[in-house]
Image (tube, rainbow, N blue to C red):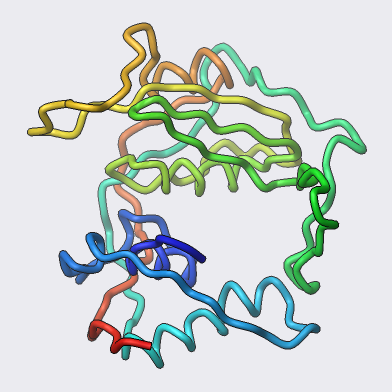
Length: 224
């Protein structure tokens, strides 16, 4: 991992969206770190990305956390009245990604496979794109919750199975931001409009019980 803030690493290690963590100090977002570590060859993806990364955070940053269930403003993701516009994924369109197996090893210079239920989220200024094959709506909701929205998203669609999808939208300018250097598509749709027009889904304001990661203690690491 290269050039990640501690907050980003915590979100990754504990699998929580950015708006479901409290107790973050300013340096945890401003300072960036490179992490180099080795693991046993038979360690699974779930072990590497979860317990092993959390153990490193506890050792190097003396991180202590706990989880609390809190009622918070959220968005319910539901099907729009016009119906679903996503296409069910075709067999063979993607490669299964097994969390309970060792990380896949790609041959040098080989193209990265398109993994099922592994949406790619990219941003250019305020313009965002989310695309993937075999994506479940639950994973779509979780990924959108990590894209800068101010609330967590809860899947209330009742849809099952995987879909091949592409979603493009323009995020709102952060409040108080002068906007210098931000790339903005003047014709870009908001996330609310994009979901309705491109996927046939909609976001509705709600209050939901949400699991929040609470940071009890953290320290800046010593030099290597």
